[in-house]
Image (cartoon, rainbow, N blue to C red; front, side, top):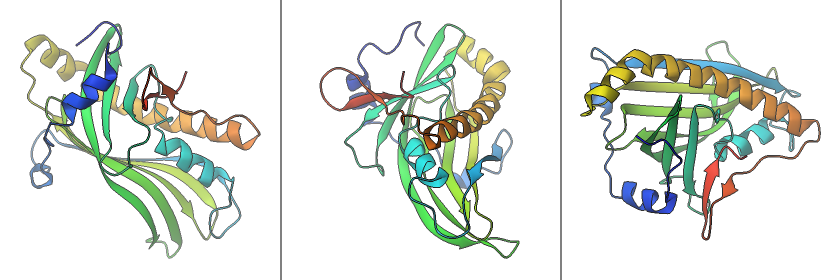
Length: 225
C-alpha cells in the first residue's frame, strides 16, 4: 500500500518476475468466487472480416496497450518491447488516496473465428492474464475485441473469474472486503465506456493514445497521460 506512484517500476517488474501464479482454475466453483462477463458496444462495420483502420482494428491496438483502463482506478507498468504472451504487468490499483501494487502475467493471446449460438460467426482478438503471488485477488481476466462477421457489430468483452486472496494486513483485508467487489465491477463498466470513447475519437481522426515511457529503457505506464 502506497500514497504515491511506485518509485521504481523497473525494480517492481523485476520483483514480480520471480512470483508464481496464485490462481488454480480447479478451485473456482467454491464459495467466494465471482464469475463475470460483460459486453460493451464499440461500433459497427460492414459485415465480413475486420476493416483496416475500423473500430475493430483500433480497439485491438488500444486493448493491446491497456489503454482501456480508467486511470482513476488502475494503471499498469510493463515492458513495451516484451512479447505479449508472458508479459508481466505491475498493476497499481487506486482507492481514494491509496495505491495498491499487484502483479499479473499474460498467459494467452486470443486470435480466432468461432461459431455463435445464434448461428452467426465472430472474430475475436485479445489476451488474458492470471494473478501472481501477493495480489489482492486470485483469478484470471480475459479482454477481447469481438466482431460479429454477419452483422458487423464490434464489442469489447470482459470475462473474469476471481476471489479474494489471503491478505495478511487486517486493515487492507477489511477495506477490500467492503469495497473490493464494488471497485471491481466499477472497473469493468468504466473500461467499456472508456474504450468506446477512445475508439470513436480515433476513428474520427484523433490521435491514438500510446503508453507513456518512464525514464530509460522500455518500461511504460498505461493508460497514457
